[in-house]
Length: 400
Image (tube, rainbow, N blue to C red; front, side):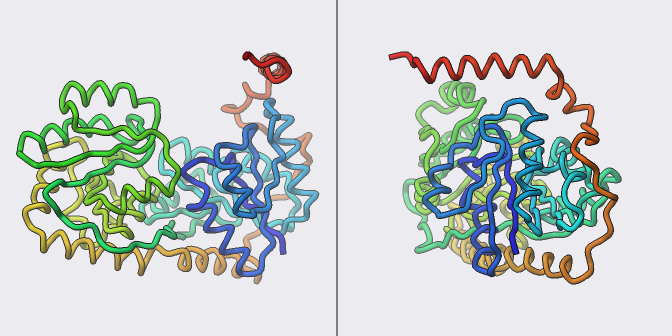
């Protein structure tokens, strides 16, 4: 049985975590899995995916104009006789759901919790057999959204990271931040204030920041203003190097205002790098009984600094928290549990529990939602043709 695992691109932080774990697990269970990249650009992790031996299908690669890309994705998915499509946030896949062969089982996965993600999953959701949320808060919101027509299923995210020796508290506290440097979603502007408060309270620490994003320049300026010399910016790093940083760090800061289910948090739990994080619901669920001592008021840097200082002053509490979090991760957020969730869902859908969907339509009759119509207009098509001409011209005569 063939499965299409569709993705918009291969993001630096995503391949090898959620999508990679699903691909590996379904393949080991005996399914023939293709990772289908539907966007116009493959993404930063193409080499990693190829070296991992994944079956890659690239129907959207290099096709800028949305209607042409949709047509190509529809042709490829229908012609390869997939029995199941598991869509991981691919807009192209969501848009062509009405055109798929009626016997194809379709599952849509939502990995981030924000209004845009909810709107995208709602598009053509009557043509989904199931919608998967990766956390309890996410599934609660999905079930409460009247625009999402498919039944909702909880299959938690996980990490394949294995922890070794737990980091020890020492004279030089090690703190890190790993992820996208952006606002407001990641709330990174709070980091310099936390560092300033720790420094003023006499805590001896180093803070490494691994990642990049649109707020990096502002963040660097804010550190120079509020906590000069307290942060080391490492830029984008391979996932292995980020995990090495976390493996020797005492704490990882996670001040996000919204998360699906943070891989960084799960990796920190596995490695003994304790998350000091915002008080959003998803974090509360992941942390379990440790949430009360680790979650901070969303925009209160003093709360973050005080919780770190408390842990530093109470080594027994620190070690007990490390052990609890590692045990919780290994009990609840493992590849085995995640894959079993997908295998159970597939089994149910294949064994007569798949709901009846509306009749399919031809591609020529496909209705495009208004938020995508600009990208299907003749003017937009002309813009993409001009871009293609510049790309071809650059590739044939690049600057020295």
